[in-house]
Amino acid sequence: MAPLDENSSVLLTGGFGFVGGHVLEQLLREGVGRVHVVDDLSTNPVGVDVLLSELPRASGLTYDPITVREYLEESNERFDAVIHLASVVGPAGVLQHGGRIVPSIVNDTSMLADYALEHRARLVDVSTSEVYGGGRDGLCREDDPKIVPADTTYRLEYAVAKLAAETSLINLHARTGLDVVIVRPFNVGGPRQSGEGGFVVPRFLAQAHLGLPLTIFGDGQARRAFSHVKDVADGVIRAARYGTPGTAYNLGNHGNVVTVDELAGCVITVTESASRKQYIDPTQIYGPDFVEANDKFPSAGRAITGLGWTPQLNVETVVRDAWAYMRKASSETFARLAGRKIIEQLAETRAGGVASTDAVHEPPAGETALAKDRAAGCVREISI
Ligand SMILES: NC(=O)c1ccc[n+]([C@@H]2O[C@H](COP(=O)([O-])OP(=O)(O)OC[C@H]3O[C@@H](n4cnc5c(N)ncnc54)[C@H](O)[C@@H]3O)[C@@H](O)[C@H]2O)c1
Image (cartoon, rainbow, N blue to C red; front, side):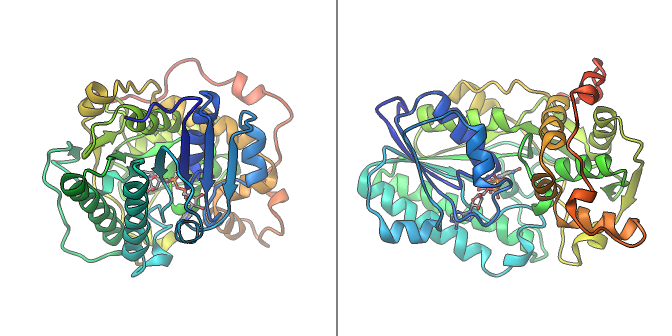
């Protein structure tokens, strides 16, 4: 067990990413002695200067803007714990890496396993709910069989890469005593998430803000459990502190199951947008290689009992907090959070196109929109 206190040191890969930024924020807030971030800045959703300005000041924070491989080849500094988040990610984000997803995920994880063994450090591997391949009609429990779909797609490559990495780590634990814990986040949402990788919450928010139709894939009845990034970050840190070595934990709010159609309705309510819903084939936006996930939502019992993890925040809070961040962002950050596809959608919608991101987003003058948000809940959550 890694105490993660003022005497502890943590190596945080992908620490400037969406989830990583919140893990970093909590580690700094809790006064962990030293945190070293390794992030190659390939998909960080907001600029490093923006992120650092939003974090608690900490003398113990250092970083290297390089890949995991480069870092491990150059440095042999010891840390008590390694939290590994760096990865290609997202249903659209993985498309440009097809054929290289397996080597990048497996090789980075394998190098970190060797590092953790050599330094007797605890390793937390951040895997994904994608490893289940849909579970039992969407419900995914850690002891369920994994389903491998027939079609070989880039999405499948991401899922099997994460599963291969997990499998190797758990077997290394069994054979060598590697101190490793696996976490499998389900759909995460909240402040600082970018739509660039194809994530639905920032995409809907940007579309609602820009008056564009909210593009819902298929009939919108796919079910997801959206978990607040702060809850997920807390689960990752709890896994580092309390996780049983060789064990995988789902991190998803089992009380937050909604359909994508309901999520779109929630976004329209929270943003007070006049946008309508539009039901489309996702390959119209992302091209023929894009694959939408099956229903998926977690059983979170193992993390609740084993890690003392209690996800607190409902879907509406996920949407409200992401919106509160996005609507206050500068034009540059807004464009990053919206993602290029949305800026293109706007340009196509408006005759003559859009010359600059300043034209698509003005930061709000005050708190009026949020103050007007409805007190009543906007999402009917389905508990399972
Ligand atoms: N966001 C979700 O809904 C979700 C769900 C399940 C699992 N996950 C997992 O959580 C982790 C973080 O995801 P995220 O949503 O924060 O993604 P993100 O893209 O925002 O963060 C990943 C960070 O890692 C960095 N990075 C990528 N490859 C790297 C490499 N080889 N070396 C160094 N840095 C590298 C990127 O620059 C980025 O800052 C990933 O491992 C992902 O598989 C995320």
